[in-house]
Image (cartoon, rainbow, N blue to C red; front, side, top):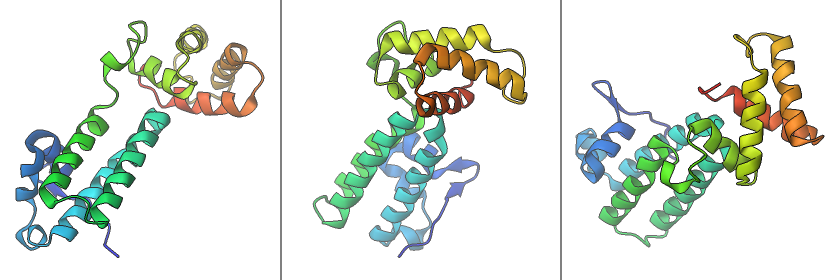
Length: 183
């Protein structure tokens, strides 16, 4: 079993190196780690997994898909279905969108903010519902709403009015909204 490693090089994380340099980022790993392909692969995977976990509250459905893709890639590597260089190329293909988040072009034009795209992804990809919840949140939120229980209840009530009486969905959506910088 490998040790969990968060690798950082002079203020650049391994993830940032992968995004910027692609497969050549492996050259920045310590030589002892670089020589052991399995250890290097596990270090990269752990760093990508941490990125996904850290970013997941912003858009759980999107990062759930990223996690599934990472799991599939790890499984392919473990079954020797990929050569090391091909594995590195695929990890770069996965890491860039995980780091940058959902692409604007993958959504209807009306979903022009990260918060709207997160609502869309997490409300069954329903554009109208995402817009309705966004409007309800914007109309109900007040300065400092996250830190004030009464103001948070006001936002929760507005979300409930937009979504209906499914309490679990309202709570999940409130948590999603709390994690958005747009609100």
